[in-house]
Image (cartoon, rainbow, N blue to C red; front, side, top):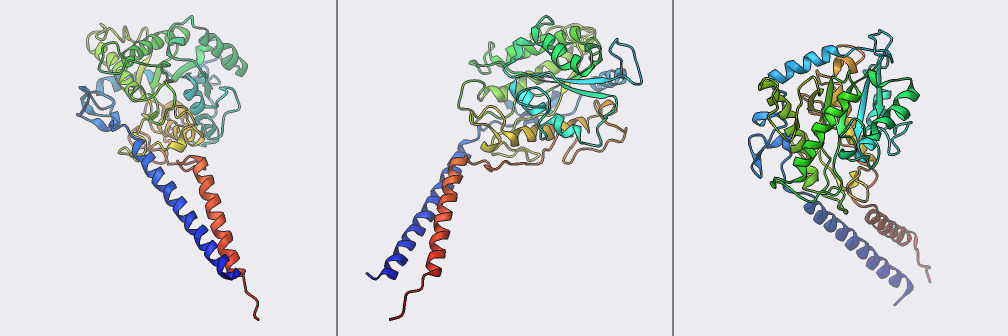
Length: 405
């Protein structure tokens, strides 16, 4: 066989091999995407439907809107939020502190993986710091969350986490516990093992922890008026037992139940109704409500378009990658700039415009994907090599000119 003919045939074979490799990668990704769902319906989309007999909707009756009587209670708590000095005196030059409470995911999404300043620019605090709609005069946003700090490490006022927040987060910024008046709480228990509908499920245990946390926070932060709760992000890609599905999904029911427990108690003349939640009267606990609902069933878009791709999660499939942190940061900013329970103190002006995509307090986060595009980086590296080889061969064939005899 002549040299030109040999080169031509070899190039064709290698090009075919590259095409086959790309097809195999695409097929594998399709399989991964097909497996990257649980089949669960996001609680916000479940409506009057049920999960193992438990009704959907963030609030009662399958809806995602705060009930009228609870909304009235919330408005009263919002009206009580005012700038205070470090000695607990109302002051026009004082501060309203919004604090985060929770574990590693919480700190990564709210500020940074280290939990310390400076915050990542794509996190909630990073975005809020440069957003002109945000109140940069009397509002102070403080990240109290930290890695490894599970729900049980926040459920008593004597827990050392509260001392840590005071001594390493508030005091260095010239702030005090008396100025904390609103909080974003996102907590979980490590290594859950008992799913619903068991009466000893981890979801029920988490509800109890959240009730204890609400009361503990009210002791440490006597002027705390509002707690906004979020459940976990999608964990269907998890490769460890730290907090996989269905526990991430079921944590949403724990939030739903603790909020409803407070609503029911107020309707029952202040007498607790849910023994798991405990006493949530306003003299011992702040007003409780949903913050942004974060869970979506992997690659299956929920009603507002939110999805969780594999590239949105770190290698363990549990902690958010940069794009996942960005996504939650977007949701939080959309929530706090659109919720009537936040805008009076969070925004610079009363007419704080809704965040892009924000609808009725449920945030629609713009889909920001990192460099992996939801596909594991090693596959794309292989694909890139294949494409480079193919391009080189095509270029070589185009430049090759056999000598005339």
